[in-house]
Amino acid sequence: MKLCLFQTSAKAPVQPGLITERGVVSIANAVKKVAGHTPTETMIGIIDNYAKLKPALTKLAKSGKAMPLAKVRLRAPLMRPGKMICCIGNYWEHQEREARAPNMFLKSPDCVIGPGDTITLPEFTEPVVFHHEAELAIVLKGPSKKVSEKNWRKAVFGYTMMIDVSARGEGRFTWKRGSWMGKSFDTFGPLGPCIVTADEIKDPNNLHLQFWNNDQLRHDYNTDDMENRVPKLIEWASTIMTLNSGDLIACGTNHEGLGPLQDGEKVTIEIKEIGRMTLKVKDPLKRKWERGIYMGPNSTNPEAVRKAREEAQRTQDVKAGLAAGL
Image (tube, rainbow, N blue to C red; front, side, top):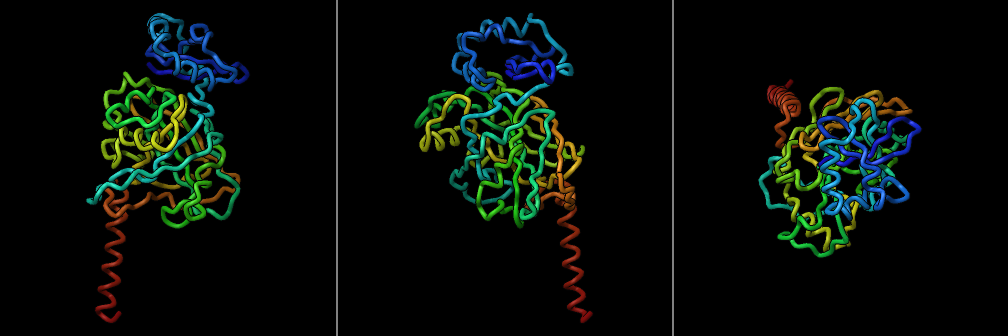
């Protein structure tokens, strides 16, 4: 089941719904008893009471009045999550080494935006560049504490996608050399387009994620490349803090394909089992960076491979020139 939040017009209230093959179906009446004061509180009410609500929601998905997806405005399915727990690294990226220990940081819930919204780059001149990181995100149910890897599913309600926009200094260092404030500027947490319930995803570590910038394919990887897989992430995070309904764990990204975001661009993230989400990018300062992508030492991204070969050839030419006394 694909749960969403949507509006029928810019001034209409945000309401809960289901994304179906027929279109978007409102479930506002079906979840009245668990609705909260905000759209996020209503979604958390659905998460906490899903087992009781599922029969009615299943019926609505099949026969409820549907609106064309193009006629509604989807919002982030959790407009202000309780916690956004984000993995640092967490992908092998074709490196042969021992798995690193899990490592995570907290990203501000106030940075969340949704489908069709605009990522606005801050008017800071200090960060060198602003990067996209396309990620699978786990939607949690709780309270869950000290969950074992064996019982990881008890803490998972479903899955969505997040773009972890990052202000960076040189290379892949986060702005301020490790300060995660560079991850939490307003609009730096695009989330959506929906929450797919856990029963729809057989294995979260076998999902194909893609990300395009102005139709250029950048991220293109499978979640089976995680160093610490979803069960381990649940266990590790829940030993540190209580995981509550509506919290998120973003699973990290494969940095192959990492690149800059700049004014006027259109970006799209997709996992077929979850959906597709497109956003715009705006930079009030109209800055420009090279449109290339990050070149990891073992990257298999075609653009990165091409650039790496060109750089290797330039280095070889310089060495040959020095050897010849040129």
